[in-house]
Image 1 (cartoon, rainbow, N blue to C red):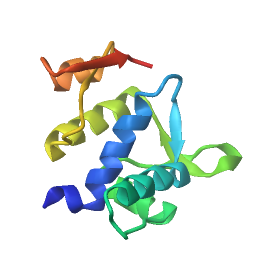
Image 2: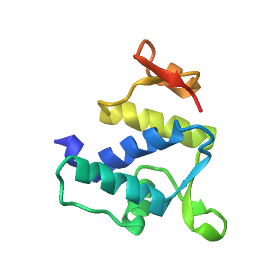
Image 3: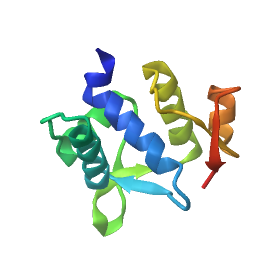
Image 4: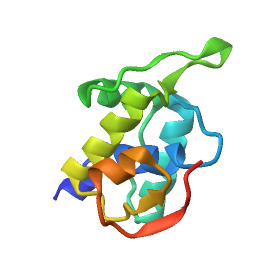
Length: 119
């Protein structure tokens, strides 16, 4: 079942965070924290480290970079946003809803249900 793959939950977490207001990037450690919360909410005992998140992001063709002294992570550039939306569609992320004003949601999920305003 694809929803049990860590990559599924990583993509879901990225979709959640990139649509938050003023969210321009995410550190690998922050992303690991969000993924681990989602795992826990689903009753999973699995946990993931920031290093493992970084490797899985690379496998998904999302490459981390140094974000100042805080550590490595992803900048939410237009290319990264488009790639994450494409992955969400490919992995059939069920919680995905179009965010009003998000050009990538408009492009990848025409006619999907809308939620709030794009950050």
